[in-house]
Every structure is written in structure tokens, then in C-alpha cells.
Image (cartoon, rainbow, N blue to C red; front, side, top):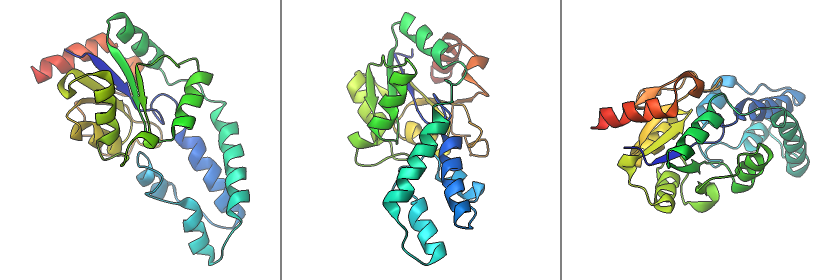
Length: 221
């Protein structure tokens, strides 16, 4: 039986991955460079230490840039694009259904707590039993740390918890934590290898939470 439902944030609750890529791509273009989509798709789902786009740009140009000015400009553009987004289909419905069933709710993200909680509040999605982000753990996804931290916080065993992810590193993290996992690829992670997930959906709106939870419980039983 599924007693805990844990969502990833970027690309799953809110499709922030396209705006983040676009903001960096525009900066690269201003310096006569191209930020390859294929490169960025391989970065998605991992923590910020995996790839530094600004350091990579400096290496290409062979010079030191005004990092503070570039980061400020990137953050402004990113926020401008992200604030136009709406919650991904099915997220609100899965949350409401899980809550009505007494299932505990969590968020597990490799992004910063300020980023995640700020957007959740703005979207009216600030009621969670537990939120864990990169600030709370030593290692980000694909390591299982953030999921293990959420499970401890929720008081749930891995076998009774379902993670919902959009990326290959996220699925790897959830499975390494011993959890069941449903993958819902975003526009930026459609090419990721999600075969380790117990189920892959095109959208959370495709199936109800109760239906998927029963199917997952049946598979594990």
C-alpha cells in the first residue's frame, strides 16, 4: 500500500527546465556561443555542482567574465520566463486525491529550498508534510540522499512510498532509495532513459493517483 507520495519539483510540478535553459542560451548567444541543447539535457536532474554554465562559457571564450552581472541578468530573465508557467497537468489532482486518501505528501528536489518553496507558495501549492532540497543533504540526485531524507521526515518505509520524477538522475535517486517510481518526462527530458521507473506516463493527467497506486502496490505485492 502506498502511504507516501513524493514529487520532484523542476520539470515535474513546474516545467522550469525550459526557461532555465533558455536564459542561459540567450547569454551564450550574446557572446557568440551556442549552448547545445543536448549538453543541457544531460545536466538536467543533477545538482548545481555537476555543470557550471558560466565557467564553461569562460573556458570557451578564454577570459574571465563579470560573473555577478551575468548571474543577475540570468536570474531576471529566468524568473520572467518561469513566472509565466502554470502547474503541470495532473499535479493538483494527484495531490488532492492523495490527501483525501490520507497519503502523506513530500517534495524532493536538487534545487535550492528558496527556489522550490518560493514557487510553491506562488502557485498555491505550499501544503506539504515535508520538503527536502539540496540545502538539506550532502549529495544531490542521482544519489538517494534527498529521498532518504524525505522518507525519514515522513516516517515512511521506502516500499510504501511512491516518487514521481521526470529525469533519469531523479529516477535513479528514487530507486536507490528503495522507492517505487513513476516517470513523467518533460519536454527537456523526453530523451532520458527512464526504464528503471516502475511506470512511465506522458502526463499525470493520464491516470488517477488511486489507480496508479493500486497498480504499483499490485506489482510490488
